[in-house]
Structures are given as structure tokens and as C-alpha cells.
Length: 146
Ligand SMILES: [Zn+2]
Image (tube, rainbow, N blue to C red; front, side, top):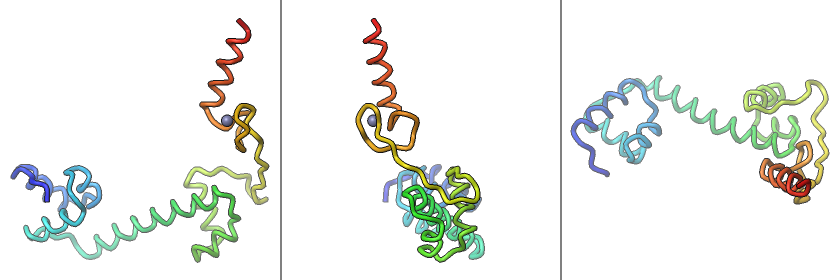
């Protein structure tokens, strides 16, 4: 385990007791999550089991939700995603919405990919697949106009 100064250790334990997430503490102090827990355990700093369960549940949900958002983005239907994650379709659309996916309500999204006018990469934007391509195209245009 990386050596922390006594001040850092004190601070770490305080933050741990305050309820900072273990992963966050690990990042902050450049040590592993396991080291954070061992350190707290050695020093007798405890958090309630209910609290830990709650944190774990949130972290699990976050990871799962991210996977759901990815699945929706990749073009799976709500029904497929719901079956995959064993949740309702309503829940899928809630999570997708929270994950920043905007879809017209009602009809399932059916978008047709267009080819980027610059690099021919399939995409769902206006003309170009990316800001980079749009930027290059803009530069080319202004160069040509000169
Ligand atoms: Zn492109």
C-alpha cells in the first residue's frame, strides 16, 4: 500500500466515516479500494451495513444503467433490452431518458444511418459523422472559396 502521511490517513478515515464512496477515496489518495477498506477496518472506522448496502446498490445500479443506455444506443429495442436486463420496458425507457437518449415517445426509434459526406462513415447527424469531419469540411470550403 502506498504510504500516506498521518494527516492523509486521518483525513481518509474522516471522509470514510462521512460516507465518501470507497472508489472516490481510492482515486483521491491513489490507493486501491481494498486498501481503503483495510485501512478503515484496521482503525475501527465503520459504516453501517445498511449504508454500505445502499452504496453498493447505487453503484450496481449505475453500472447496470450505463450498460442499458449503451444497449439502447447500439440500436436494441426496448423489448430486447428489457428481456436482457430482466426489467420492464417502461424502466428501460426511463433509464434511457435519464441517460440522455432522446426519442420520440410512442413509436420505437427507427433511424437510418447516413454516410458522412466527408469520410463516408455511417452516422445519424446532419451531414458529417463527427465534429472533426464537419470542421475539416468547413475548412476545405473556406479554402476553396479563397
Ligand atoms: Zn466523417
